[in-house]
Image (cartoon, rainbow, N blue to C red; front, side, top):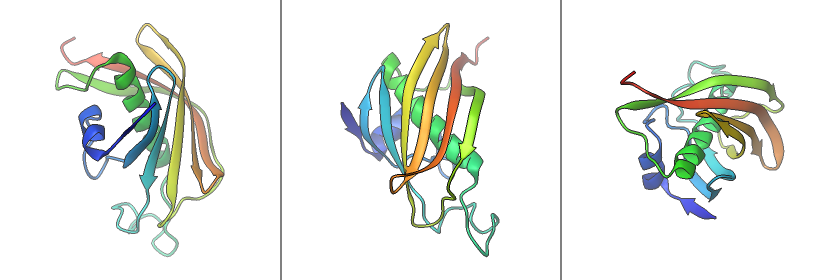
Length: 149
């Protein structure tokens, strides 16, 4: 079990501002699980347009943050890093449930566990919490595709 700072996260995700949604990895056990953090601030680029009178982080971005944590776990498990010759895609989202709004000042604690990896399709159980309360949960499926095909 190890941790990752932002520099190592940037080496394991192709995403960049304003779409990088993981700030820190508290724990990662390749082949098993990851515990990642997204600090939500009022400076997020989506808040001015998403209920400006009552800022709420869009649910699709919470799911995206969970997928980015899953991508880090996948790459660490494979012992690989993203490159310009491949892309990491969502191929499915099942059972997504949103239980609590997430707003400025919240810290999302994202836990993702590998359910399976067959023929290049990864399946994950993911959940995001704020202060111990479930904000979102979903089953995610992702794959890495070569851009050369």
